[in-house]
Image (cartoon, rainbow, N blue to C red; front, side, top):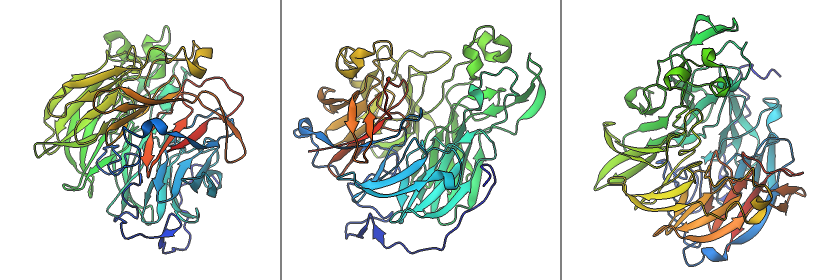
Length: 525
């Protein structure tokens, strides 16, 4: 089967009346999940990453968290990136070896696995799934989006949503009102080949029918690229291109508005790059958009010596790579709704959700040209009281609590100074960084953030004090019979807190040397 052939794989429709292998409970909500579940990347549609119904893991009990089980991945050179979804007594996630798994969330016992190679050879799931209406939805590195039966793992449909060969899904899907919303990104601009005809990828956000996978609408972030000349090597030069949608969309159910951020350009100067988009969820029409960086054209060659001719922004300082790679949050202050989002420049932006007018901005780290590694990477959290944001290579990376009314810093806690001199990271001083790649998560009274030093930490939401830490850079015996090894706590997502359990993926760049693949770890009281 051709990897790039557009097709739909359809099976006979089966009415799924079970949730997580059990009959629907009286407390079940419309999406087929219950309070305490974590059914999508952000936990809820508004992007809070706040486990509002968590009552077992508290500031008084968090110190008693212990490892309950581990699921080990085969060693194949690909890091663990797929943040799990937890619904009922099931946990759902992708594996670096091209499989998608459903396990018992309490024990790690296998339920079913789906092999992506039956649809798209060499594909891997690096986004987090969404579980809704008896189906599990996710994208892959080949640009396919899938719907599996939640109970059996059988394929319901698969759609190749990406017209470009380099397109992929780092964006995690969200379910709303019968549709799946997901963004598309690409690694086309990271080719070191100077003879490559850069670039033709166009970022886009798609709305798909949740039952069939059919495209309802598509919003492109840049105009169609056109040949405009040649690069110094003689390769054809195309403009504009890029502005991939790396992050996951959120939905304001009250207004039917979809919010999502976009990345930098690869070539050219026009398009919705480094922009927060507010789109009509039903039609895809623009309600408003806010561009937070006015010039940002970057490709990998911008970091190479003697590459000025391949990086026009290098000379004028606009080769920045200041993506909005983080997912937005909706939050309310005195009855008014705002939408905030972090940027790789280290700035957190807050806008009026209805009009898009800027409300406040807060610089949390010094921007880092040509890579954007110093800023906010994957996402932030809002618990109804504070906004929690973490900077990555922020010299050092720091966790912040911000006042949602004005962005004032309530407290800030640096990644602990001993992070690289204790535990497994101490054996690899050239690899370790005091940095925060993962998205932040919160639950009542607690904030969860992992580090590149391989340690997962839980902080007191009142003052930022570390209440619990676990070093993952060591070997773990997996419930699936393999041995796995921890590494940097994974980005592309963050901690998942659901039904009295804490789940994390350990295995991200930079990867600590090991003879084993990475691990999914499950903690409980």
